[in-house]
Length: 283
Image (cartoon, rainbow, N blue to C red):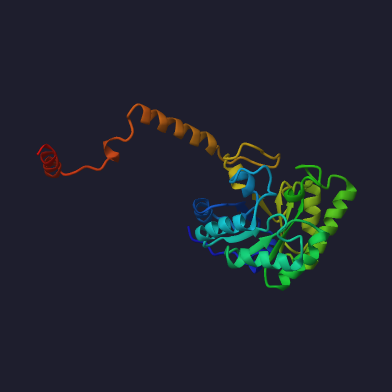
């Protein structure tokens, strides 16, 4: 399947036209190839790779070098899909200069088309500085996993009027700062609808209801590959963990019973060459 890579202008056009934006995570070359061959508009190389791929307890330990490593692999496989890479925890909070430098590394070394960072008013000026440096920025509001401890854990945000009002205000600030899009995570559907209606930039929901301009899921959640933590908002589109487990059991059994490899999996010498080898062995 051939497709044309999405641009920032094209992304904005999708919102204007009322066409839904399709986004999913990918963390390596083979999954990026699969996503690239699908109708997916965007890939997020999320710092969720810390939990899903690297086995960390949260996204907090993820480093810039790890993000660049995985982003490079994804970009090599996703030639026709717009790639956004996460700025990991403490790669943009210390200063605007450090934020610009690290965002630049994801673009220059990683090959990403844009970067994403978490937070509201506290990072608005940082977003403005990164955008002014020529780097497109996607914002992230609601449940922000990097600071989940301060939010009381991995739970929905904006469920009362005051909290919802604060998230809406942050969304407007990030748009004014120059963010080209916002991820809205784990907020009430009504708030997702309100923010989407109030902003001129696209919203991408993950547990933010059906009214956002687009949706994003973690690939391993959607394909049933990650069982350690499955949020309420995840829909499982396949059960690959069960398929893989069955395949591995079958492989082990065939090896134990000497059923694998079969004749069709083996290389063979020509009869005369084997005869020559055996003759040499006997002399």
